[in-house]
Image (cartoon, rainbow, N blue to C red; front, side, top):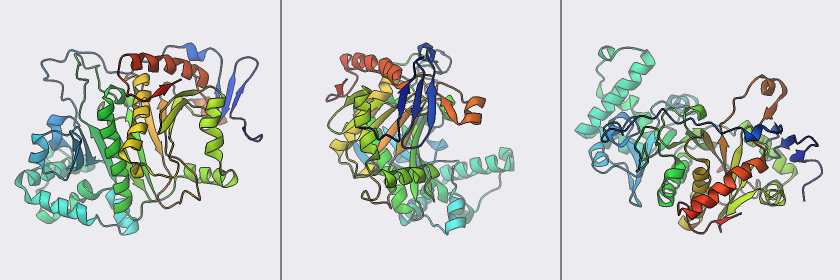
Length: 425
């Protein structure tokens, strides 16, 4: 049962729900009636797609490979390939691909200046091979010019001619930087007829979503392995512009940082006091409060509590394993649960998908942190009340969220759009 010093969910006599996140300490209130408001639709304005001519509308689309950095890895038809040259990549577009972010959150220069970091042997060899290829050399020159223009706020004609050494130095981040992007193939659904028919995570097939997840876990692991100064590697997905997305094209981001986030440090302190914190307030607490949405042999999901936004939360059932340590069956099980959460959410709601994992240098015996993922529905705007009080107004309480998502999951299952093996509540 729940320990007496923490009461994460309280329903008052007037119907107000007070929530306290036992992992982060976030305080949330939901006032009566607000959950009945219609959910917003943030899809772009609907315009006809004309004979496929405007199906490739952003830099992440398959016909725009020259606008993104060289591929580090890809999965196509279930096959993993690494470090293709541009002509090879364009000849057979990937189902999902890993590229360096052209404009990094934490730049390569940060790592080099503060930690004397050097890109890995793998990255250096990939860079040299790519620059020796004439098409690759032209590609890198274009990308370096793009970054130069952005940083110097100049016109194309003002970009200088770069020497070979300058190209080598300026393009290091494309091959060995510490901010990567995992990009799905489709901008629009297969049945799309308008520009509003975007392909979100839930519009992928379960097989496509598994490939997307598998490459993301591999990318996270590669960041840890190639950067000895990385204390934490964050994985997240921003869907639609209100959730922070620059492109309305499905992608995840992988960012290494050189310290443990303060949020994680506070969580470790709580775990030190209560080692079974996740056991108490994860599955057990969700089940006691009738919030479980679904599960299979490898993962479970529930309507969560104590978040600034309405949130679905899912957990791996393997608390000692990092994401990249799961075998294909275990990872597929978690992927199927996550895919179902996205499908039930739908493409019109802006969503942040946030991964929470145990840092690689901390043994499971020191911190029992299972891999868990939070899907936050960005349906509200934080305002002065939250800033002044530190209390967040979440318009949908966990039970109302369960009642919105649960029936949708059953409908999707009846339509054959979810993976087999899911046990729905």
